[in-house]
Picture 1 (cartoon, rainbow, N blue to C red):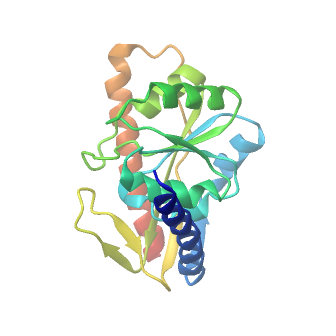
Picture 2: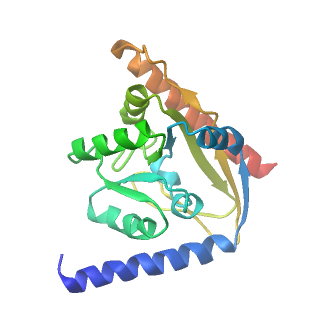
Length: 218
């Protein structure tokens, strides 16, 4: 990356943070179900936060200044969130299921074993949409981390024509951000049972989306 391109990316991060802050500040934000998550953090328990790719619009602003590690694709598309989030107190790790991930995996394992937090997108970066891969489950199995689903619903959206039907929140929306109940993976879980546990977590994340929409409408 040459100097001119680096300067462009620096300004992308700066403007992205300004726009995100202004954008979300016009909205009314309500948070539900955060108590169990906060209790885990206060007790120093390792946490893996799971967010569908189509629901990550709120994530950079919402989880800022919490010293959370974020797994972001090393592709050019991942450069924008990486630049925005790096200056908001995130620990950025570049890797994904479609790229070499061994180094990133070891970094996340080390972070979780220290009682840290990691955000991952279990269906990203290329899908299939809302089909959970086993990465988050395996992280929890190896480190004893708790899995915490997270999503949001908003009253005014723009749905992009992308592989995941990405949800952009419109300004001046009502937003309900929802944490799912933390899930503990049994340490003696057999490899043969990984798929059934993966499907259970996938269903929980889908149910959480429905719950968010109901809370928004109430």
